[in-house]
Image 1 (cartoon, helix red, strand yellow):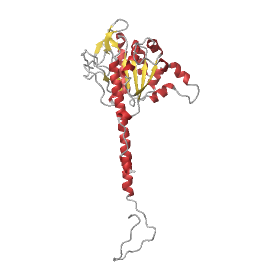
Image 2 (tube, helix red, strand yellow):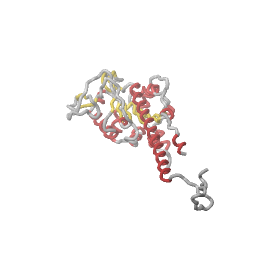
Image 3 (cartoon, helix red, strand yellow):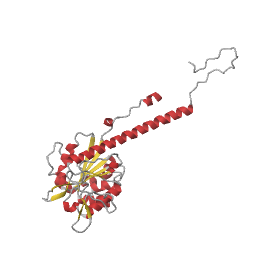
Image 4 (cartoon, helix red, strand yellow):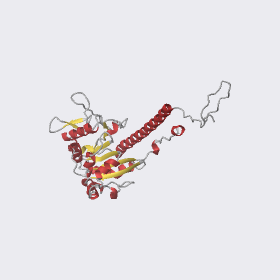
Length: 317
């Protein structure tokens, strides 16, 4: 048994079951990029489920062409949430999704859903999933997308700060290219929501833009990956305005998703290895306590004379 335990196979990263990714889509024009984001993940070993708000469906029907396409028939909506539950012991969809998923990504995250999640409102499927989420146990990636006036509004900073307090003490922000401006709080420490800020026209309130750095920054550990903000970029928005608020590129979002799934697989492998080593250690301890097993002779033992040949014990053979 000891020899068998010593050769127990520890699965490699490629041999682990697929990571379960839950993609939540909210009512922003950036929802038209959902198919393009799925294209970026088409080669990953992951199972993806999509849930969308009612407002998101307006944009999903106008999605940009993609190779993967959007599986509209598989998108879970508020209607299914209520249709599935008819009596006691029936499945509750938002609880089942929360239980199934290893990772949740909200892309895009509009101002309305941001406010709901930050304040605990759960009046639809998407916000209910987040209200039930296992915080600091399973990673969350949010990808804000909204008009510049909404992004720079003081409430956006407040709501993002609330999420960071809930999910993680230190944020991991995505870089936005070709921008270098940074700012800090009055105490000289980085703002929890953004390293860059701009003044609101309503007063001297610092409002988030994003942490703008020249290179993509990915979390080093799964603990660091528990809450990630893939900040919006500056571009010409759907309304015609130029400014910060466009959802980050699908390539950047996918980079965070792929890296986080890799960390999840590594953690599963570490847990398996520790469990395996613990089992081996327990078996070795039991063997040491019990000592070698000896078989008693079927015949009564006789006292050997100094000159007589010593009898052969039953376990000598």
